[in-house]
Image (spheres, rainbow, N blue to C red):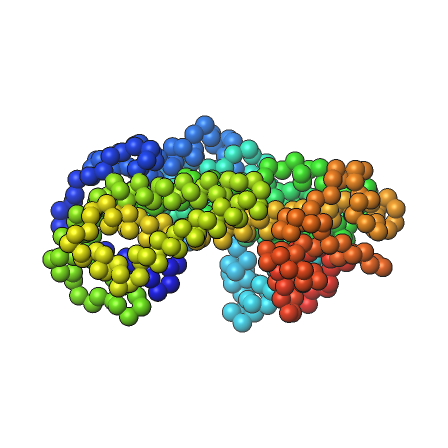
Length: 519
């Protein structure tokens, strides 16, 4: 958010639908088709065409996931166009579908709302530490009921592709046509959180039962789903993918701590982890999905007609705009707005694509610095109001102001998501080392005095700290070890993480893990 200088709160529709007054090319609309009946880009169709190209239902993990979710995973039916784009029939009303924990507690166990929180807390514990059915009988019963749909989820995770079509509710489409802002982006994506949480909980239950092969298949399924879901075009897809992989990684650590594994088993499983595809890059989301969302939004404002702007910070307009403002806004050169926005996206993407974190951070900081300078010069509430109303303001200046106001919202979000991606990258390094340390201990009965003793037999090379560029901190103890990165803030906080009191920013692995409080 822009805080007190956020612009564009209320936008009124004009009586007449305007004719597009911008050219359609790579520098303005980014994609050149398909066009709707009024000559505007149909970004919903454009993204579906690009994202679903060559993906048949038998390869699409999402097509199979719907057989586990049923027709109403979010409480309402998806539009018919959604399943048509997937190339499958809508799932029948009744079947062996996944039952969410809340629904199970309410409808199958008949517990009251006061008892729901206790079961939720038990679920959190069950997904991160080994447990037995007697510890959390409600969670065990829930997993048993979901055995068939979870088997489908595991099979879906083995598929090579993932396509989640964009589609709007029928009433929205009939009223407005295809618009990205109306598309149902996250129904199956958001539900995947509970699927992964169920699989990791089942894995932890199976650890206690000694079913280590089954444990590993559940955990691998979680990691695969994280990467598949993360392929979606938007930042929300990336965030969910990162969250899913984080759930799986916590369960991995509990698994190698508690399971009785041979050296070969640990090493083979480490190889499988390292063969997983990397998480989709944040730059890809900015390049395509977020850019198209911005362009579609600007296009929407053009075709609807703009009535007035409203400002925060005590300068809110409470009545319809005067004729001067209407005339000023109707003169906007929308092509300049589109070009200006695309230039900012190009800079973000270029900055995010630098492989070296230090270089990437410098380039991102330069983008932020340039944008903040522009914002300070133009986007103060009083300044922008005068800017809009000045008779001598050139159309392209106003258009660039409009475009930059929109894109800054996405810029700030994108940079935060990149930080989350970097944290995941370091967590993966820590996880790989934890597996190598488990293999070493299986061989020798102890942990090494230094990490260097792991290479090359147990791991090819010892990674550095992603954030400091220095060696990771490793402190062996009598019964285990503490391994950590200094985290995003670059400060060594002794291995304290977000869950500690006081909180820290370090990313750590502690063996043995501290006991979780039973709730």
